[in-house]
Structures are given as C-alpha cells and as structure tokens.
Image 1: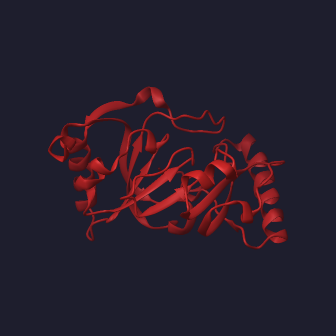
Image 2: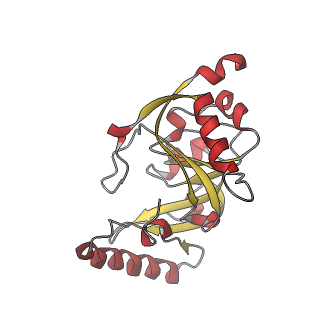
Image 3: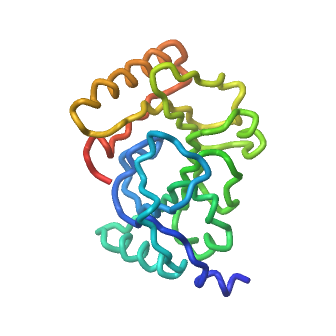
Length: 209
C-alpha cells in the first residue's frame, strides 16, 4: 500500500514558503501546502478553491523539498493548511514527509492523521464535536468578530495554547475600522479571561502570503 502513495493525487491550491503568521509558531519560517476542498463555508475565508490543480504526492514532495532547500538553513516546519486538510491528508501520505515537522491547520470537524506532530485547530464546530475528535491539541485558535461568543475553556479538549484571532477582512482602507472593532472586542474578552491570548494574522498585516 505504501508503495503506491507517491502516485496518490492531491487537489492543491498552492505550495509556498513564508513565515507562519498566527498562533504559537508565529514568526517562524515554514513551507505551506494549501489543500483544496472544505466541508464548511466560512464567510470570511480568503482561499479560492476554483484555482486548485491535481498533483501527485511525489510532485508535492519535490516542490516542498525544493522550497525548503532554497534557504541557507533549510526549513523543517511543514504546515498543511487549506481548506480542510483532513479531507485529503492521511498517514500513508505523511510517510513520505517524515523528514519534516508536520503541522496541520484544521477546523476540527475530523480527527487528524496520527503522524501529525502539531495540531492547530480553528474550530468551526461545537465543543462536543471537538471532544469526540481530540484528546489534546497544541493550540486552539478561535476566529472572533464582534458579538461572537467563546466556549468556556473547561468545555474544550486539553490544549497547550488558547488563542483568539480577530477576523481580518482584508487590507482595503474601509475594512480596517471593522478589523479594529474585532481586535478591541477580542482584547476585552482576554482582559476578562487571561487564559486566552491574542493572535493577529501577521501575514495579512504585513501583506505577505
């Protein structure tokens, strides 16, 4: 079965090298594999699923290796994002990426492959579903806009970090007022419950990928 894994096709939006803009790994250099398809329809999502292309797993690996090797000190951090990566990613696929520290950004609707080393969950489901899918994650990162209600941390699976990420709607001037409102709202939540931490989308603020 494993011998066939290089030929598995993935629907890929893009593969690129940048810095992680969010969460506990913010500021770290990484290679990103953005997979197409999602089982949710978040109104603030900024990924265009119509521009995906099919790549074999071997082609993905070759591109990841090339991007990693382009640095003076090669990147070991590999972030599988989307979309919802759990719709395509499996342990069989991850076998080929064992040289990397594999991280995933997931909406929490499905369990993640066992060979993922770092789970960043941006929940789009209830704490009940999260408890079914996870016993522990490395970070929860809740997208928050004005008026959104967070669950109590006691309702969630265990995590190393609990982040609030104000919804960032884009770089246009007229949208920054709403972004600032979301940031102020998030900061107020944190000041009333310091177990939560603020995570801004630095890549959007810096206008990078």
